[in-house]
Amino acid sequence: MDSDFVAVILAAGLGKRMKSSLIKGLHPLLGRPIVWHVIQSVRDAGVGRVILVVGHQEDRVRATLGSGVEYVTQKEQLGTGHALLQTQDLLQDFQGDMLVLYGDTPLLTPRDLGGLMEAHRSVGAAVTILTAVVDDPTGYGRIVRGRRGEVENVVEEKDATPEQLEICEVNTGIYCFRAKEAFPALLQLGCNNTQGEYYLTDVPGLLARAGKKVATVVSPDPQTVSNINDRVQLHAAASFMRNRNLAGMARAGVTVVSFETTFVDVGVVVGQDTVLYPMTFLEGNCRVGSGCVIGPNVTLRNTVIGDDCRISYSVVEDSRVGSGVTIGPFAHLRPGSDIRDGARIGNFTELKNALVDEGSKIPHHSYIGDTRIGKGVNIGAGTVTVNYDGRQKHSTSIEDGAFIGCNANLIAPVTVGAGAYVAAGSTINQDVPAQALAVARNRQVNKEGWAAKNRGTK
Ligand code: UD1
Ligand code: CA
Picture 1 (cartoon, helix red, strand yellow):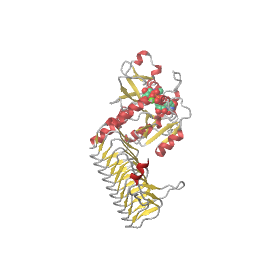
Picture 2 (cartoon, rainbow, N blue to C red; picture 1 turned 45 degrees about the horizontal axis):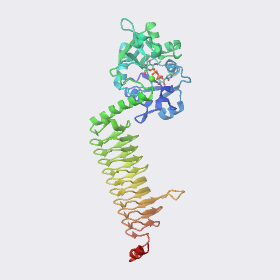
Picture 3 (spheres, protein in one colour; picture 1 turned 30 degrees about the horizontal axis):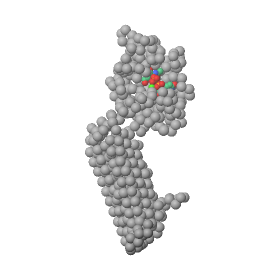
Picture 4 (cartoon, protein in one colour; picture 1 turned 120 degrees about the horizontal axis):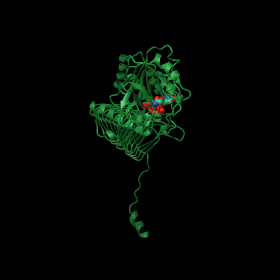
């Protein structure tokens, strides 16, 4: 929408109330850092240039968020007003408007920000504050208005009189400033308040007293403008965002059996007519096709799943799964699993770095690692690829149509040729030619009448 708006996001504080060694802005919310969501909402509102004011754990913040935004350092965290002032050099030639917001308000919609920017422009104010009218204003700065309804100032809770504490119109911490009005006012700020900080919230009062126009827009939804200061609020924000995203998925044709117990990170795509049963976790970069049944109790992490798959009680990480595949219950697919169409990975099976080609089956109790399995292969219960000799990993190849009997050990490196059979209980340490039968176990000996003879002597 407004390419001549610049956004400034303040995120230099540690976030003491989180009681964490990790800076507040990097705490994850549906798989992305809190401040990532703020950047995203600004971009969704059409602002191209985004400046982040950083301080605590600056290197980590920069490494996480990358070069898509500009960074300004606030060396000492002397308050939100002081934080915004740090952008003065970077913006010295900038004559336009700044959208200023805090890095702990991750639920914002384009409507919140678009409405604010539009109102600011149409009124031509020096500052426009996005406010919210809430039932419980605890923790927020209060909007103090004069007799004609004009904004006199914003008072922080810790500095408010008992009467001001009763005010239910609060400062969301989201503002538009005309840059050339903001910086002179920021330079005038004092820190004579309870917290000894340079408050950004004192700027509207300063501008009002200087006869400049101070406008407000009341947010249509107090929840989307709420901020995160502690982990109780983090939980509340996560629940709200999860509900909003799951509702979007449900409206697009996904059956979500229980919103309360389904955890889908932002950016995950799920196809139409897929059913998500309770305790499903879709984390990182996941894509699930249509017509699948996922859950209960499934974690998929950075994994792509085709159409018409069934996955229950299982964990799949950094893997690819084709269409018509059944996984579980109780399977663990570790990174690098590549399961092609129509394959079946059954109970208590672990895979790692394994290709399982079309229609092959590993139905029970197997460990398959560093292995290529061809098409139409059947792996008997309890098969183990012995891929590690204590120093190095080795690979196994099982070619199309091979049949591995139960409880076989395949000592890698080894190849079982196409259509070959491995007898149950065999320990295979040499390649098996195509179409051969490999038997590698002791012959059975039956001692006739042994039991009767021995029973008498005991
Ligand atoms: C702030 C507002 C309050 C408002 C509320 C809305 C001030 C003084 N108060 O209070 O009126 O109702 O947000 O969410 O602005 N930060 C810096 N440098 C600093 C201090 C803070 O970058 O020196 C950043 C923090 O990292 C944080 C943001 O500013 O992202 C807001 O700081 P926070 O301590 O959360 O302010 P609140 O107490 O919530
Ligand atoms: Ca806050």
